[in-house]
Image (cartoon, protein in one colour):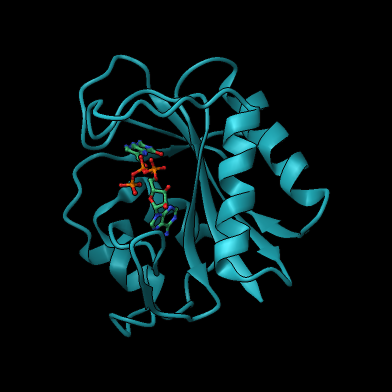
Length: 162
Ligand SMILES: Nc1ncnc2c1ncn2[C@@H]1O[C@H](COP(=O)(O)OP(=O)(O)OP(=O)(O)O)[C@@H](O)[C@H]1O
Ligand SMILES: Nc1nc2c(c(=O)[nH]1)N=C(CO)CN2
């Protein structure tokens, strides 16, 4: 199965944290490809520190739920602390979200696929369009390139040199 992820960080050594998260996931799953790194303004909350985001594709034999578990464990290993009752969004050393698991559509309390807010976010669609512009979103039946064109988000994602 092909799983498309987005990694994000807006505290600490962001590039190193994302690189380390990919190294941990790649120790058991097969890395396929990655977008460039993008500098992006915080979406959905106020904060001085910009994010670094990267989209990464893996090949996996894990179920989507087990892959999510690997992501949550990796976040924890890299110092992510989740505070119950805190604000909806806050700064974090590392965040790993699943965007797609093949073209599976799923709506459970623990996992929603495709990621339910990706179409509202330039920080997701811009790096995703760099590597998978023609991939068809299974719910909207539109390509990533089209979703990016239609995205109302005013926050831009700035591609960084490798
Ligand atoms: N596609 C998905 N990818 C990652 N987590 C998901 C997904 N769908 C549901 N979840 C659930 O969301 C929970 C909270 O995730 P998290 O705190 O990282 O949210 P967030 O990344 O801050 O916000 P957002 O979901 O808006 O990007 C996870 O523990 C997981 O159970
Ligand atoms: N720019 C940017 N903003 C965010 C991000 C993120 O990765 N990048 N993640 C969030 C929760 O998933 C909320 N806001």
